[in-house]
Length: 275
Image (cartoon, rainbow, N blue to C red; front, top):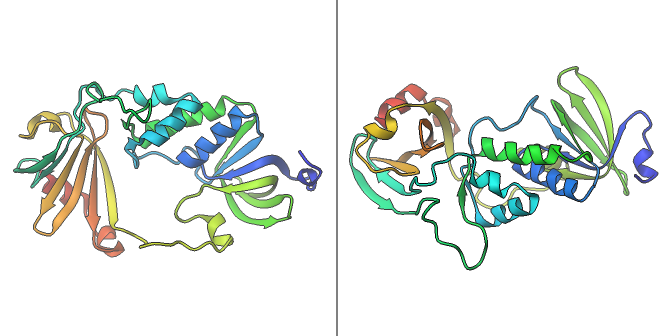
């Protein structure tokens, strides 16, 4: 640690301060851990930020990173049935008609890619993040501070001083680092303080996830297995149903036209329409 890194005797010092313990922050921490770089990860939630399986598929390039970090085997083999087809089926309801289907091979039937030793892999984020978290925690140079929220930071030229709120004790702490990395998502405090604007179209859609278990949904619908069922109504696509674990855990994503329509959406009505 440089002299600048020790500038605040009453604070906590590190080489890299990572804001956000989602998949990007966790992967960065694990990568720095493999290099012996001292780092601290701040996460405003008091436990893992990932409870719902927001991300389902892990792409080839990400799997290559997982391979380098030493977690690819876990991501591939977390428990999803290897014989389960990864099709996308377009249906009117789960008791209605199949309109079309995009076939995709199961993990058992996947063909090796000439460009990479890895494959696209179905691994929901709540499993994926846990694998990367445990890998990062295996390094003594990586520390985690759950329940700690970045409030403000100041650029000191050769160091950054961050004001951090411990949301459990309400105590404000000072962290000093050589580098600060914002991995805190769409509503990034780091990005906003740096006045970095969002570009592009902005919000593509508005949606609500409903996570549920059903012992008989897999066998009660009239279709062959699919990883994803796209629900089509008179208005177009109104929801997508994912098989999370290939057995009894499902995620229904309901789409709306604006934030108000999603806030007013009734999960019970969505589940009834699914049938």
